[in-house]
Image (cartoon, rainbow, N blue to C red; front, side, top):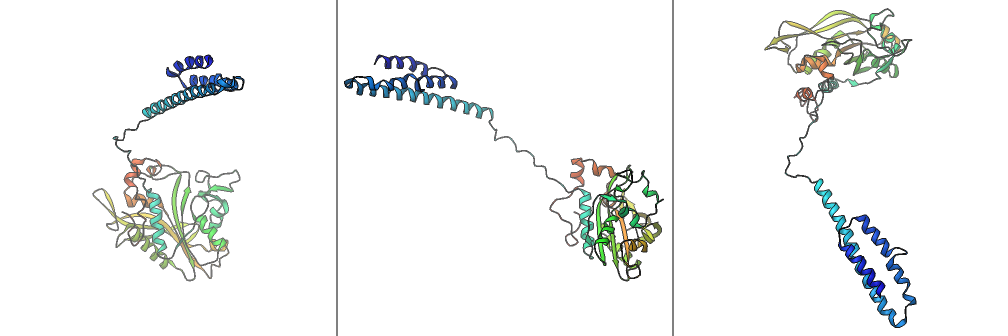
Length: 355
């Protein structure tokens, strides 16, 4: 009995004092471990006289329960204190104002591509795409570009190998070649996408966006081309009337070829499209050269067609009053917030193109 009292007198004051979790676990092991003091007392029960055994077992259980409860309470107390301290450090002030919500905007180039696609889809054009890395044949040879043409020079074109067989496409016309090689006429497509040329200033960038159109069918003529472009320009700039003129030009892949100018005037420092006596060149076009049709196994006697190409970035600059092409690629959120568009405002001819 004296052993039980000795255990109780030794450990009760300790458990009522200030302890950390490591010290408590050490006490618990000393008492209730395999060779602990309480565990050893239970092993003695069999050797105690029968008339004292019952009382000894009862006292031992009482001491065991008392010490076990003290240990459990102490552990819970320490754990709760640690949790409260952690919560105190991680306390969130619910009275603080919420974080501002930054809403994204659609880039003017993406908006312009969607507008162009919407307009041409209304008159039967489908959208085709192709790789940015092209081969020399699709980018130049199939388009009737002579070997000595300046566009083939390294100061204009980004070649990817010494043999000049792989390159970054200089226009999206290779998409037209790919489409005509894999399908049979008629064709009525537009091909928007990134293009690359070795040029950089306020109105030029080494990477820019173009859209090119192609319509191949029987009995297609310049009248169809003029009607198509007249419709597009009026719809894109959202004007009822447009002054448009075709100036003779030269492109290897079209014959005859022309550059298209539209009338405009300056009012209060802004360009007003469709009015005035000034002229602004916006695109190139022409009737597809017979050699191009032959290169894609299309009979130029049976089928004719027209093609056109224009800079998407330039169109966006004209329509939305952006005066520096380089701003398109600066990733400045302030600029995008000013010139960008609502992500849910999808342009259509019925709801309006730009808002």
